Amino acid sequence: MREAHPRAQVLESHPRARGRAHGCDSYNRAMRIAELHRFPVKGFPAERIDSADIRRGRGIVGDRAAALTNGSVDVPDGSWQRYSAFTVLKNDTGLQGWQVSASPASAEPAAAAVTITLTAPDGTATTFRTDDAGRRAASARFLSDRIRAQGPCRRRLVAAEQGMFDSRSAGISIINPATVAALGGDLDPLRFRGNVLVEGLAPFAEFGLIGTIVRLGEARVAITESIERCPATTVDPATAEVDVNVPRILAATCGHLHCGVYGRILDSGIARTGDAIEIEGEAPAELIAGDRTPRMMSVVERTTVGDGIVEIVLRDELGWIGGHDEPGTNLRVHLDRDGPFWRTYTITEVAGDVVRIAVRVLGRGSRTVTGLEVGERILVSGPHGTMTAARVFEGTTALVTAGIGITPGLALLRGAVPPAADRIRLIHVDRGGRTGRLWDRVLDRARGLGRIAVEARLHDTARSGRPSRADLVEWLRGCDSALVCGPAGFTRTVLAAAAEAGVRRIHRETFASPSPDLSEAVARYGPAEVTLEDSGTSFVWEPEQGTLLDALEARGVPASSSCRGGSCGTCALPLRAGGVDYPVEPVARAAADEVLACSAVPAGPIRLGI
Image (tube, rainbow, N blue to C red; front, side):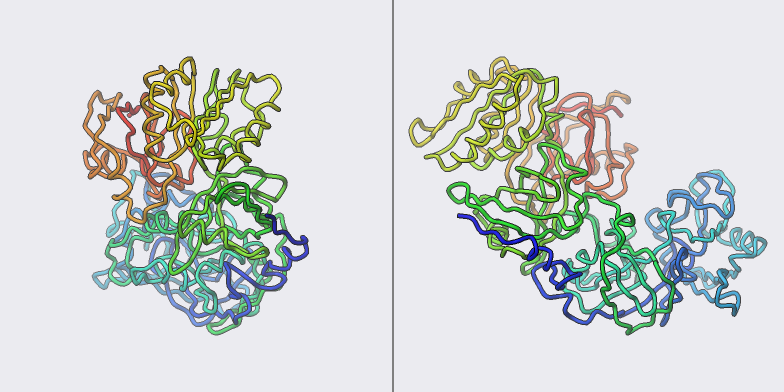
């Protein structure tokens, strides 16, 4: 059964045309500026303002106008540097206890300098002009006496013409309080340090603004990307207490670490609280940096391809999918039905900006996805995944699948197989031909590879019962690599058989719904020995210790981290032996010999290169 529609109808569903987002008519509502904020000194608290002078190439006048270096590197005055060179909230939560105010240093409309006053928690204060090097030096000494250094270099208050933003391009950040409320926990939107709080949008609908031009009062802004959140959001702006692990909440409940969107100023102007926010059209393509981050896709087609299995065809409205596609990856679908949740589905095909995913109709997530109407827009991210063709195929490679677990095999075979592979064994366990059409497609793709020898075995449990461990050992003997995908019990049996058969590299993907409580997901694993090769020490990891990163930190082992949600890759560690699992699959990609410690748990004894 197939349902499709003309391309024109798909395009009509884009906010630039009709205004639908995330399954609702949110763009038909009146969007307005609810609050305006600026952060005069990078990393310090916000100053609420009634109006903002938004300038092209600068952002809001007085926003991130200066930054205090942390002493780790010597930062020349007037030059932009990465946030790691500065004292920021994620590394010094005490900054939230300060008060900040700013005002133009000149009455001239084109003036860039501002006067900033910083008041310490004890009530003492310092004031400087951003264009007065002497006053900035005096204020830097005042701050250095009260804020700890992170290195031996001289501390400075530096200013640059474009502002001290996280990127070289000045911009403006927009936060949707409805999205923040949907995360639960009565979170203050100011945790997300946005310039503009918008009203009139449904939760998560701001992601649909990416790729558009909006008018904020008199200013015109191109919405270019979503904002990945860091540990600074763990600090309550009212109490300055570190109380909620927001990145982990985002990762667990939403499946990504993004909240809010960035805008690049096209035309300067004044914006005031209460001003309308209007979509004007499509942003220039060169301003929109394609990525794997959350954005909208439109449902183009739905096709039943098996017993309770539906293939959904989506169009990536921003056209990002092709630039990051790799055989074996998957797509995350982010939904909001009585609260945010997400599901991961294998990408079975990509052609230009069109992507296909296969969905087994089982629970709330799959019923929601397969119930989407043609033309409806949904929030997605990706492609994601670590079980790619480059990692899986080597020598004689077995793809061992069961039921809907066949889709990773279909995904791995949708491109050229790496030269390291010379033979493929396809082993699929089915019942009564439920996935027969997908099996036929797997065979067609494998046999179309040309130089690769293909062996195929279809085991029907309706006729022959479940395969025994001895059967699996025999089928896997002589393999160099194997990918296992299917229900948890099936996966455990195949893993044991693969080890007995002497398979050197074993990869697995277990179908499981993401758990909002990471501890619940981790509890499924058993104790395992972790050896730290460089220090010559070892310990026994147990589920109650949390992730590998949690366990290492609890033992005082130095380990870098940032997002703590599997998105940035900062926590990657060398994996010298053994294997790990990811209870909640990370967004960041790690090399075959690395492990993302903030998201991983040992799958057995492992050795780390630290």
